[in-house]
Length: 291
Image 1 (cartoon, rainbow, N blue to C red):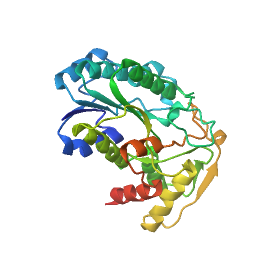
Image 2 (cartoon, rainbow, N blue to C red):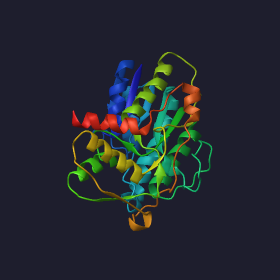
Image 3 (cartoon, helix red, strand yellow):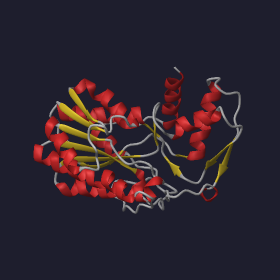
């Protein structure tokens, strides 16, 4: 099986290219090799590789900066996935595309299911939704995997930021009225391995939209507090002080959903994938960071 991974330098892309090595010939398209704002370059790269599966983890993820760069966000998050879907269909390949909880507006009080109405609050969320819609309209054999609050041992993410700030500040002020599910990139890659592994074995794949995230729900404040508690337990810091604040006290350029927890029942039922408690994955990720 030949698998093409876009965005291999990103948090999920890096973990995916590592986990998928067991399945066959893994090829990667990095930004330096293929400019995702150039549809012609995308088509040429895909046609050169002729993959059986395309795993698209590449995205414009600077949520606040997207408000001032909507055209760039649209090119990467909406147009590029559409081109990948067209090429996948032309080749008879499958496409697995990474999307986000930010396609929702956060007005629910129970975890979002895949068929809930989308109403993104930001340019980032809108362009990611447009990418989803283009893929579904293409007729390609495609799966959209929405996830949330991704972190890893590398890259720019909330966990690494809190670990760094814990050694620099006596007090952290963290938003407590935005609720979701932290997701470890390594866990996501293992879930993806199960899905692509079924493809390799010729198993039937129920295509469509799925949710995958860490098990459990918390706020950014709760997420930060558990990171700090783990650092104390690992004797990296002696103590910590973290103060809950409201979104209003921490204004940002882009709107964010107040509640974006995802219901992952569909992916569990269709693929037998188990969710790891987000607290467990946080502790394991910190241990890898400290190793």
